[in-house]
Image 1 (tube, one colour):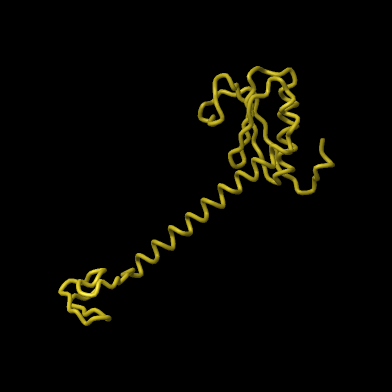
Image 2 (cartoon, one colour):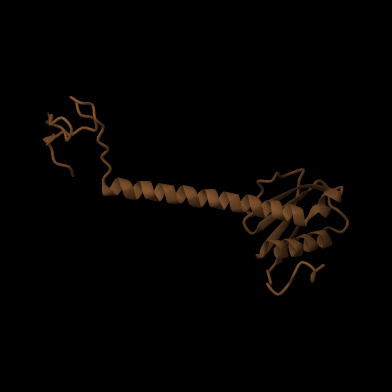
Length: 156
């Protein structure tokens, strides 16, 4: 709490109620208490964290697309989405070798991103890139645990 009846440091004006602006000389007095500084600091930390997380997701998504350029050559391929450790591939129809396409994609993606990945093949005619596991319907599902002894050249 701040005390009442303070004098202005610049003009000596006596204000019965403390204000941010002196009524006589119009000097601004910023009043940020400890609580306000803590809240401001937390907001800044959260903003930086969210920004870094967004940048990381975009970089990983870009890296995954560079790792899997062969998907574009598949006529049934529609879209590719990455959400953390989850990869979603949309197909407008089911390719003959869906299981091998997905297994190869999750293996290469896991090595390129250096993390465990779960991959779902989804019907792109029914669902968009915002599909999640709660919808339940998918064409194929696979998982790849990242092993740091593998290199991109040692696997498929």
